[in-house]
Length: 228
Image (cartoon, rainbow, N blue to C red):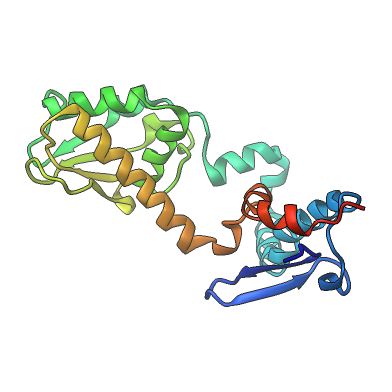
């Protein structure tokens, strides 16, 4: 099957959508000479054209709020982003100091000591996954993670069940696992499962990035791209 300038994806309801990146794109094969143009048009569609209607609605609403507001005079764009989206700088030491405990746990419980040692040992991506799993976002609020009121509550004794969370309340429901190794394994499995579900529900048409697209189409490209 030959790769052409016609792409396909699924909409929010799972229905297939065909889109021509160029006029009569299904008749234009991707070659070594035009593959950069294909990548550029594909990226432009995914990042801009496919969400143009939604972005225009957002922009209209945003300008209605800010046009006559001192907001645009008081803040730089990056400061407005911080107010709306939160900070990407994560201080988990500060979060540990402000976290509260419930259901029989305290900061001196062995499972809690193991929990924080495990969290601090995580890499940046895994820490962001934990934050998203527990709070619904991978960013810190204005003022940093020390301003986040997180609760860790006991959710039964040792079990094979995964931890759960109430993101509206920044609450992590943590079973009292029997070992630090099991705690780490259950946490990571829960985070990655949550991420896969989140991706599937919130942005199905974003799941296929340009890089993933070419990885998935590698065999097709080898067979279909003209060597002219």
